[in-house]
Amino acid sequence: MNLTNDVYFELKNVVSQFDISGEIVSIEKFGSGHINDTFRVRIDNADTSYLLQKINHHIFPNIDGLMQNIQLVTDHLKNVMAGSVEDVTKHTLTIIPCKDSKLYHKDQDGQYWRVFILLDNVKSYDIVETYQQAYSGGRAFGQFQKQLSTLDARKIVEVLPNFHNIDFRLNNLKNAIRENKANRLDEVKDILDYINSRENRMRTVLHMAENGELPLRITHNDTKFNNVLLDENDNVQCVIDLDTVMPGYVAYDFGDAIRTIINSAAEDEKDLSKIVLNIPLFQAYTEGYLAEAAEFLTEEEIESLFYGVLLLPYMQAVRFLTDYIDGDLYYKIHYLDHNLVRTRAQIKLVQELEQHETVLKDILKNTLSIN
Image (cartoon, rainbow, N blue to C red; front, side):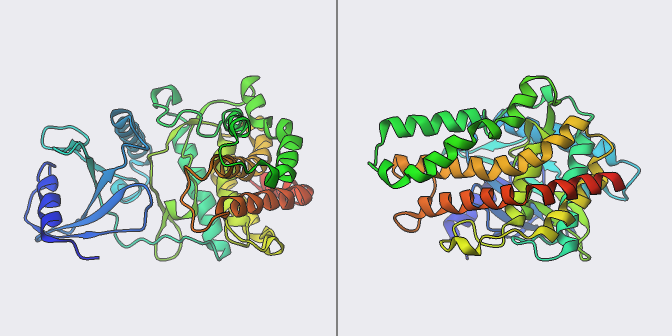
């Protein structure tokens, strides 16, 4: 999409606030993200392009904490990788500061902006299709967690409090049930019965953490596959989209990644018979993940991985259902019962995971024995 002249000159003025030398050749829309507006900035006679982003401060109100997190994490990653890769800037994000050394710029309209070096000659996928892709995705996030395991999680700001806290999500659901704003409770009694019957089991990771069995780690918290950049041979190059990096538990990252690759159907598939598990992709991701993570994970963390696999689609069902009962206030919908369809699809995925529990646990166990 071409930018209007007014927008182009506004963006050019924003870019001028950052520590970038050279004449701007072009600014164009970039990527397909749903949270931040992103643009590619090309500079005359420069090998490097830049990524300009307007930060969604409605979702991330603590801009200082957000950017400090990213700087802490990327600086640490560069230190860990120094000497083992030819150019660390190709394997992690690099923030370009403003001319006043700040990590972001606030414009006259109260909008917040940041700039990264744009990583070229890489690719990402929205859907995992091959063993190599799934394996590389597992390696990417396993390596990411391993490299950050030596950074104190207490230094990282929780920019989205309770993001993966199932008690918080269930309490929100109970509040929605009590208020019943859209008068939809009669439609969802069967779903509520299922959710209620699984509450205790879905608290397993949280209970393990509360009992001191799980160390607090620095986790990505948005491990969908298109947040991994791969090289031309589908090997790991870089983990991106670090806005949600926070203190957490490794099972959350593992579970959310599996949620997005193991389902053979779309997240809003109406025909529940199409929702079946792609077991080979689960195995490939697990092999890649444990190839990197096995050396630093505790026995309890490894035990928690399967419960993360169950928890994340369950939690997403709780979130979709809460929004449906509230009258569709949070998630964008494309038809009246879209959130209900999403809820049922996630519940079906949990049921499939439960039915294949022995198989999935055996894959985890056997893969661990190899590493």
